[in-house]
Length: 476
Image (cartoon, rainbow, N blue to C red):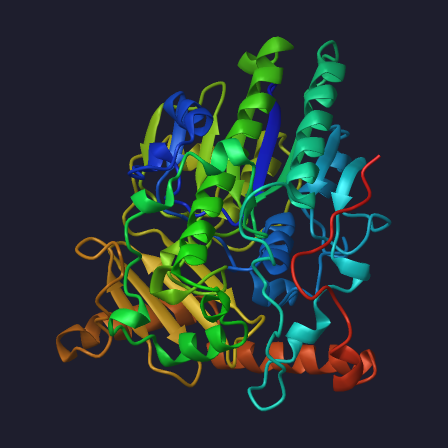
């Protein structure tokens, strides 16, 4: 067991490239950059599912979504599958959380000794209405998911992040004289919508300085047919008043990234002030990314890197300084937490500690996997990234294949090119080693249909769950 403490900071919806240390041309994240400079940045990290609740259930358990069968934002983690937190509790390691969890209920045995200011799914059930996925049965969202006001200002989410950070700073002070190694999970919500950023951070990104987004449909780009159907469920792009508001949305997103960075800086500063920095391993990551207007898409829910890749930075005792190019996943972070404390934990096959991965030469052949069965998906979507290739399999739709070495922006889908047929076949075979996509897709639809029936059927389900961003808990 490591003698060092472990602090995990997980944001919500932070695009992997939206950090200075990741080479972004204008996003300002000095505190995350400083953390990366003294530790390891994993440059090829992914979420097991590009939407909040399933990703967080996978992170809690170290298992893929098709293994947890927590498919969407109405199927939250309830502690019924043992996770890394339970392993730490079995080892008598103090383990607490502060902030967003997006689990079912504070009463559930989710693996924390104490949950401070927890955000859970709305009403303990989550977005049941969005679990109706069949194209002829679903009801598209009528409101604006990104928020009614977009731009500079204040929001309940900003207040919540401030309270989470304040509580974390106090918690660290309280632990300064406790000799026992501890584990603390901190769940911040920025840069998740609503797209309202504190003015001082919003103003870092003048709208007239923002470059155009890539592959916008207005320029003639045609979205993949599965993506087109998924996006039609909300179609946030169509709900902007004008181009100026669209630019404000992007500035607000980047402003929220800098607001997030500010709060990370406060937390790291509290560790240093308490004399705990040199004996604490820190991991920063996010549950998934955000498209931020690329391809005319907003929010998560796609398999493109903007949505499915996550930032991943680890610093602390014995963590080498540098960049690791080996592909990793949030479920590797799950294994890392258990291994840090030598705690019992049963994760998905092939899952490894990030610390072990960082200590080895880059492995270009390591595969990572993600899947999506949630809001707007008319069928299951599956991603496999291995080496230079990134493969997307959509049940009932044509696949996508990208050469991430030659085309890191995923501009050119090679799946229909006969000269890449062998690569497509090989990547599909690799994906089938993880799961049977057709069987998984059928299981997801069956489980969702059973859940909807348990709530009284379609009309009852349409009334269950928050219409947009999950409400914050009462702050005391």
